[in-house]
Amino acid sequence: MMMSITKGSIQNYSSQFEQNAPLVQSLAEFIGTCCPKALIAVGTNPVNSMVPLVSEVMKRKGAYSPNNIFGITTVNSVRANTLAAAALGLDAECVVVPVVGGHTETTMVPVLSQAKPCSEFTPELVEKITRTVRYGMINVAKVKTNSADSLCGAFAFARFVISLVKGLRGYQGIVECSYVRSRVHPQLKYVANPILLGPAGVMRNFGIPKLSDYENCLFDNLIPILISDIQRGEKYVGVFDPPICNLCEEMPERCPNSVCTRNPTC
Image: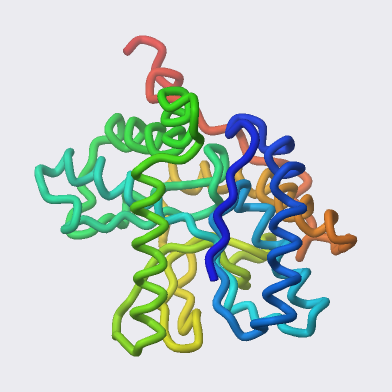
């Protein structure tokens, strides 16, 4: 079962959530009643909040399994793979860049330091690719004013669903990045990271890859934003769980927007 409903401005996630949440909740209740063992792929934005919402609805229906609910973030990986491949002079199909965190411009981190087959990028190129991947959805929405979706998004949705079906059919080695419930980070209930798909949904969670200093900085800054997004989805259905553990008293310094912020003379 795949959910993909698009309403509201992509630049206003609160408004988008308020418009999409009733429809997503209704669909989740229907699935929980009529097909409780379904694998649910959620592509409705804001995914950061919709996946927790769906999870809590399924809990109420007595049909919850954390391995069966996925937030589709594949479009971020597609963009990262394409940009990294162009920089390396390779085909996009030959490059894999994990994208971790969440599914908004301030919560996703392309892990270029772990790109395969090669992760040799200059700091300037890393920041350029990271910025382009993070703001990809907003840039597309500006170009295509009549639709928040794009062909890239449709391709990414199809790719994830095909991977899900391959896993169900017993194909081996089906790995995708997806936003799922996990314990891979002590402060986050839900995180996007590479997972192995199989007949039971999530067969293995590979966790967050080793990050560079720059990527760690980005990840540290996304934590409070992602916690707030998760709580928004939970509160909509009357769940007021506290975070897994408290945020640090001293928040990390904000990452520079570009290398020139660090070096004003460049």
